[in-house]
Length: 476
Ligand code: NAP
Ligand code: MG
Image 1 (cartoon, helix red, strand yellow):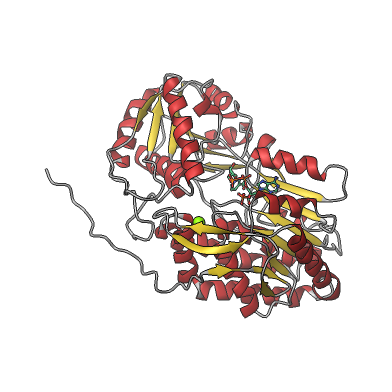
Image 2 (cartoon, helix red, strand yellow):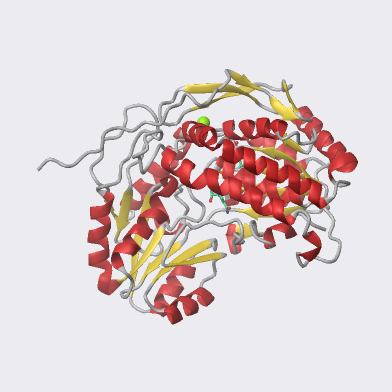
């Protein structure tokens, strides 16, 4: 039997103009760094995209000083309504340049254009619109009659949602009257640098936003700089721990958005076909490079066979490949290091006795690829059930009673998110009250909205981003 195939439908790259090299964005201008430079590549082809400046301590110092000047002289003095105008302008420019951002993000990160176009970039614009609306209403946010900004925010973000994490950091900080120094991840600096151009286009006063590219050392220089009043970090629990230690004893305020190992819980009365879509979205969206990914499937024993059969059938239809092809569901793994980590944990999963399954799929020759994978026969003690794999790998466990589902779901050092699939509203409410997770989705998964707060318990970090709650991190 010949299988129906879609013709390739590649999105054109013509809309993006990638320069051969980029400087740092400090005080409203692109400047050469004092340090070395590094290359950013396309993870789907390993093609070198551009040479990027690596900010050293002196560069970070310049950026923090520029942010301080802008804070004292301009931004903290401006009325909320005026600040809001800039944020609205930025939001509109992002919408106007949405296709450019979507294509560039796909190229630099490896994620499918379908997702950057329909998820990342629209939510980025929505986030700026949302916080633009708060800028002149801070007195009504519930943080006192006249809440004040903190000063200079040092912000460090990961590579999995480069532009979206930037928006989550910059929009609330600016709305509240802070200025920022932000470091994108080493492997995905390009959309942050395009955002710097948007700041120029919006006539944002120089120094309000500073983008310093680099790797871990640059991040360390930002969070430990004495001129930074507030540290906002999204990334791994290990680095989060190091940052918490680095700022302990200082006056800096800190929010940490760290890892996760979410349970996606399917009860026997769940609408199975919808649940299967939710499982697929929960773990294969963004190649599973998602902190709140539903990486542990907890399925009620009585329906486990049916759910797994349908899940496997659905996984056979996932299209893995060129991120710029509009039909692609699963793109490239972001880096060789991340691919090595996914492979290692998957091998450990097999060695510990779990059963591994992937649909047959032809992976491209160049670039970093991992097929959508599930592990069955997983026990709670297995490392693949405990550690974040951060890739397209699902660990399947079963349960018999709601109580057992809660115990297993909460049996993790993390607490970022969870999903519940059931027909019963009362069960959804009971489960939600029992689960130690910052976000609980019911009969859906991986839904993000600027108005709802996002953040974790336990080793998933502290502080909330999004919604009214997201303002608290940037106000005195
Ligand atoms: P990571 O290694 O912790 O890196 C995050 C950022 O911190 C990067 O920009 C990194 O620089 C920088 N960095 C590294 N060492 C540092 C140090 N000592 N001081 C300051 N900054 C430092 O995390 P990742 O592997 O890129 O990202 C994946 C992790 O992020 C996962 O654990 C995921 O769960 C988590 N995440 C959480 C959320 C959430 O909202 N809770 C959202 C997305 C991702 P370079 O990488 O450029 O070297
Ligand atoms: Mg890259």
